[in-house]
Length: 597
Image (cartoon, rainbow, N blue to C red; front, side, top):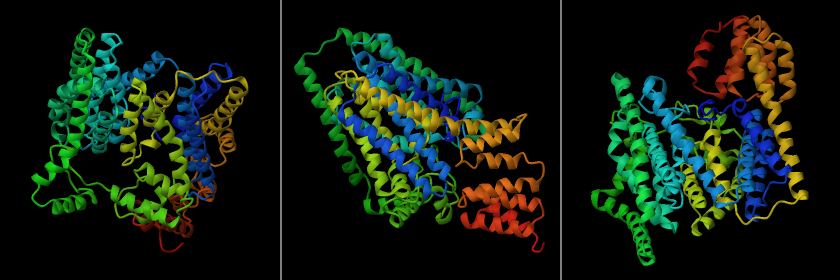
């Protein structure tokens, strides 16, 4: 729903309803006495996530965008409720595998649905350079949504005790998400996938069982690399190559499901002796280690001047290419991430303890940037935390994640399939999030936290006592009704006015009351104002609420210009230009302002 219906929207009004549902469901489970007591490290992790959310909320006091800082805190609480729900409900091995399979089959199903949609109309779902940007309208986030289900799919396909059809469908899901990722051509996804593969095949005792389905799906998908990436720079033939890429995804899914079913039937009848299993596992481990060693050796022997090669590629990485002319986006190294990270590190150095406030990176980058992009995040989960929330924020984030990772690792070492899937997905997700903004996109973060909670859950947990469960249930319900619901209702009322509400004044009055931090009701009031002069008072209120937001200054300047109040228009537009130096749109409007009243 978050991916397909809401298209991965990061606007709080689009995902808060799902947060309400998650928190109420957690309250219902706990209030009914059906919850299990999480292990102590998991309790520490949930406390860390709640503490991280509280720090984000507190940072609204010094954030340039207080309403978005509050939204960031609510998003963290959403993730905490999702992880907590898995921790207190998932107990038996079957329940754990059900959650693992749900993540695998839902992400695989979304990839198949995307293929069907692209077959119908490639131009609607493939962006201008030929990369898939559906169901989330950002190719890298779509890749993250697909790939978070890869390790769960491989784990289910390798689970010997499951029915052959289920294992076959899981391998089909693995092929679908891999093919979907190739259509997005996400380089961050490629790096993170490679790192997670090394981590899993080195650390997981069940590496031998995972190796066979991994090889099978790789042998099916890899030969179709060109067909799946062909839409890149194929503007003149996008319809044909886009449909062919989508068709390739669909037949790969069917073929992998068939191959996986056959493999499962054979695997059920083939029993390796313990000595052969141990030898195979050691060979798989040796292969993974040898691959890690071989990469630098091959590099040093194949490149004549390694230092010069690294220097050239480092310079390429630091700047986005003006035009990509290669056959695939995978071979293009450059982007503006270096500039994003430079600004984030600078802000951290200037504000090391508490940062510049949640969601403060976007306004800071507009002032310090050396590129033409306008990112809202630093494209790194660690640098976002450091620049916006300082050392305190990074420590709280670590406390919220590391215990869950440790529990999943412990379960993986004990050959628990769900823990293995969770740890593999976490290794992928966190590496990708270190170079992108996966955290901010609920459709990408939600399956990750549900899976991580399931991987850290224990089947041996005792039932929560009433005196433990009821207070938490009350708090969870309060979060749903008092923290999530008011801003969601406020956003819905503002949207209702834009859609033609019969009582706009009343709706906007309630929208302001329900969410005192939001500027959306004031912007909506200005949008439906009967005259330019009538739009000025609500826009001035918006500027008072967020004086460091370039958009509200710009809108107020335009309103003054339309009302022919040129001195005020120039003042507001210059204030907007100071917040976003060199912005072409602002400069263009500013040139239209007469010099004299």
